[in-house]
Amino acid sequence: MTVIDAPRTPEATPARRRGVNWEKWGWIYMRASGVVLVVLIFGHLFVNLVAGEGVKAIDFAFVAGKLADPFWVVWDTLLLWLALIHGANGMRTIVNDYASNPKLRRILLGALLASTVILITLGTLVIYTFDPCPAVPADQLALLPSFCADVQ
Image (cartoon, rainbow, N blue to C red; front, side, top):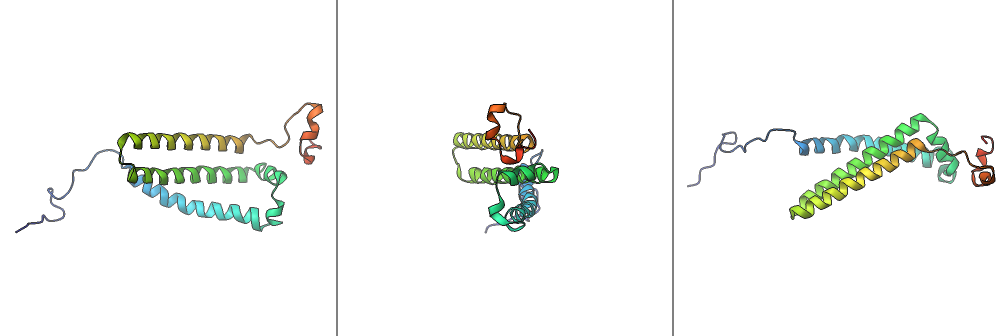
């Protein structure tokens, strides 16, 4: 006869590890960031594709106008950071589930971390340092967009 311990007896409960439960916080992050990302993505799509003249209005001047407004700078930064971290966390879960070799798992997780950090850094630099009308020598003024003629 087999005897099964009651569910909450010390023998049936695995020993709890001390410290931060990263899996739990990763799970919570995925749910919270997913909800915020839905709002950010549909707002982004509505402004770019529905409002105004639609997709035919998206050009360099449209992007320059959006990135001149601090509201859209924060919006795009949140969208970039949340989407990249959300995606990297999902990929981390897949790597942990399917990479059985510990060395391969460490390599894949390292590559995932490196690519995420690089993309977040480059994307943030583009958002915050974008200047549609940079100062250029007089012989290169023709290379600038037409709306920059008033600035020079």
